[in-house]
Length: 262
Ligand code: F6R
Image (cartoon, rainbow, N blue to C red; front, side, top):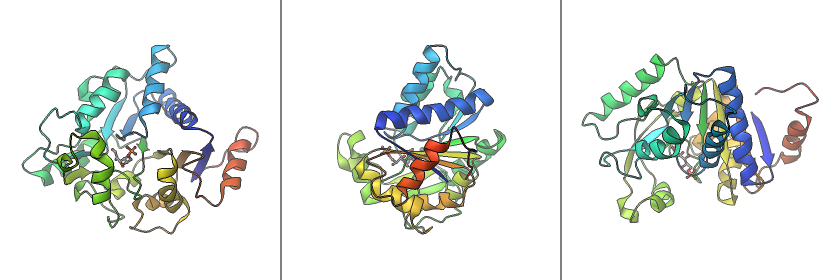
């Protein structure tokens, strides 16, 4: 795991955009796994800005969302299909067909989950998965207690996640109780993973994910099993990490010494 601790949230956005841009320049038709929520928005905006300046071409990407709420009416502005259309597809110049989101409105949710796994597999798997992290350590909507080898499935949202996400809805009790989410096993199948976190509110979850024991109590800790994870955090989100001096040394040495992996 490579952990990059950067001074500000803006630095996190720029560095995350660099890592995505590197991947896209290697492979313009990259299959990108995309998180919603606030954490990656700055990176998405920075990528769109670079494209507008002719610095990269995002129009050949194929994107897969991590998750979707169950039971929201189609087109609901807080639904992740609508969020990704607004924040990613349009600014990146991608037709909606190149951004897939699990179908949380289908009668047969089990079939929707299976179809989603199949769609990811047919696309050749995720090349780079972008993740945020919940204050309770979730990735996707894999709440504490999730199976570490889970696949795309229906999950109940925790009270904490519903409270955290109430800001996107008119009232707290409008937040759906359930979601369809890629599983932790699905996420681990991605060839590379990039986790971004900003702010003190994420510090405990980041520390548990990166330095804690691997445990279903902090679902993000399963990333310790992945061979190619980069965690990009600002000072506030890094404030409860123990090995911060080591992470700084690795980042500082990156350009003059062999680049480390994993
Ligand atoms: C969103 C997702 C979640 C969020 C997490 C952090 O698709 O899967 O895991 O990344 O809840 O949310 P923010 O970034 O809003 O703090």
